[in-house]
Length: 353
Image (cartoon, rainbow, N blue to C red; front, side, top):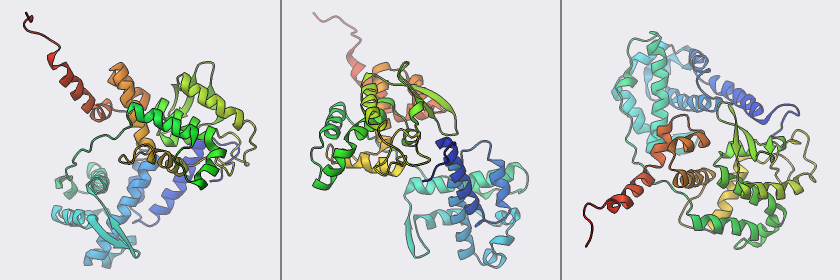
C-alpha cells in the first residue's frame, strides 16, 4: 500500500476507505447516497463500507428475484419501492443469504453473517422511516436470527510462554519458514509481545509510527476506531522487546512513504493487517493445534489476564477501547461465573469442630 509521505497512517486508511465506499455506492440506487451522508457523522468508514456491501447484495437479490424491481432497474428505484416488500419477503431474503451464487462464485453465510446483513438492512429502513420518507417499515417486523454464543477462545498462561519461546527460538518451523525467521525473529517477537501485552487491535498495531513510542513514560500513542487518539501503557516485557527491535529498525532504510512505520515487512514497507494475521497463525499453530488463534484472540487473551488480575471490568473496557462496558462484560462473563463457583464455600455458616 502506497502511503503519503506527510500523511498519518490512519488518515491514509480513511482516504482509501472513502474511495472504496464511493465505488460501492456507485453500484447502488442513487437515492441511497442520502443514507450514507446521513450516517457519516455517527459511523466509521469501515462500517459504512460494510453497509454498502450488504445493501449491494440486497438490491441485487431484489432485481434477480422480483419482476417489479427488475423492470424498474437499480437506477430508477426510489425509497417508496422499499414499502413494496412485506416481512415475509425479507424473511425469504434471509433464507437466500444462507447460500447463493453471484458472478460464478458461491457464497455461504452462517448465523452471524446473516444477522449482520439483516442488521444493515434494518438500519437502512429505519433511516428512511424515522425521517418519514417511508410510512411502512417491514424490516422492523423481522426478527434477527438467534446467536448461539461461542466460548471465548484465548491462550492459557502456559501457552503464552510457549508461544513467545517458539517465536524467539523458531522451533517446529519448516526449512523455508526458518529462513524467514532468521530475518524477522526480533520483529516478530516485538510484535507478538506488544499484541499480548497491551491488547491493541491489529489495525492499531500496524498503524504505529516510531515516533508514537514514549519509553520515558512507557507509553504508546494509537488511533482507535473512529480516529480517536489515546495513550496506552506497556510493561517491562513489552518495553524490552520493542527496544531490541528498534536496534534493528533504525538500521533499515524504509521505502518512500513508509519511513515512519514501526513494523516493516521484508519489502521495507509498513506491515499489513493480513501479514500480521498470517504471522500469528504460523506461530500459534505449533503451540496449540486445537485452537484457531487470530490477532483478536490475542486481544481476548490480554483482556482475560487483565480482568483476572484487577477484577475491574471498567478498566478492561477502557484499555481495550470498548465504547460500551456491556460488550466487555459479555466477553468475560465466563470468568465471573468461574469466580462465583470457586467462592461457593468461602463463607462458612458453622464452625467445624
